Length: 348
Image (spheres, rainbow, N blue to C red):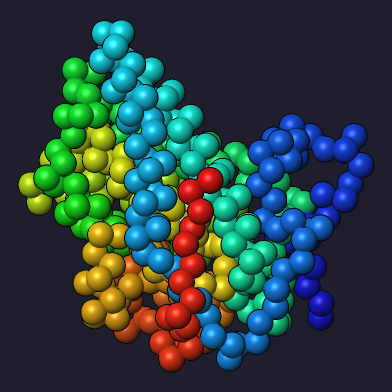
């Protein structure tokens, strides 16, 4: 007895070859933004599993995130300092929403360049999945839904027009960035694991697992229920947890934390063949306990997992370590990392 696949489950990606007259608004948006996961005109290097894998220069990652996170902060500060104009909550949302989207699009383009330079994980077996024909609108909408929903919550809960970026709680920032990723991952780990383990919840997560070789634009490829928890539920639980711990978590610190989280979410679905830990001020500590998460960890979660899986964390492996759900690495195994070949992420 054969089963018929639901057309909505198809990962076939041919729309880029269609006549442009067949494109709708969403096709044109993705094309205008030039955020294709790979350039079909440029060769992608293919590596065997045993070939050495380069590693990300951690300082270049921090520089990249902080440089781009600082741009709207500086613009905000300069505008108010030189004109006296106080940004209303709506004006602040518009500024940071626009900046957030530009940063995510820029990162996706950078990761495409790195993919063409260093190849992709499991590249000797399978190409990266493209943006599915049936999911173009979902992918296009996810770009602004992810950034917008998080910023709406941040503005509503923490934005104070009388406080400027220069007033940020600088002395707490290092700790807030590090703890934000660990605490967020606690909430994400259990919500994520329950969606795999509880039959009635799997239906809300299975769409995200249709891709076995994800790309950076499929980071938020999901149904509405998962979107809500990824974009709003988990960040809010993280924020309130840190507030209960006594951390200030003002608007500007939360903005920087969001940039660290979003960078890793996009990177973690890119599949680039580089030993690239999640960006965190606690990376050194996580590595000491073998609890840092890298690109291959989440890639294996998609490639090897379905209902029953592993590597449930998104920002760390702390909770996977504690609850014994880590999967062995393959290409990024410690003895396969080429520490003499650092990779720096270009700013522009």
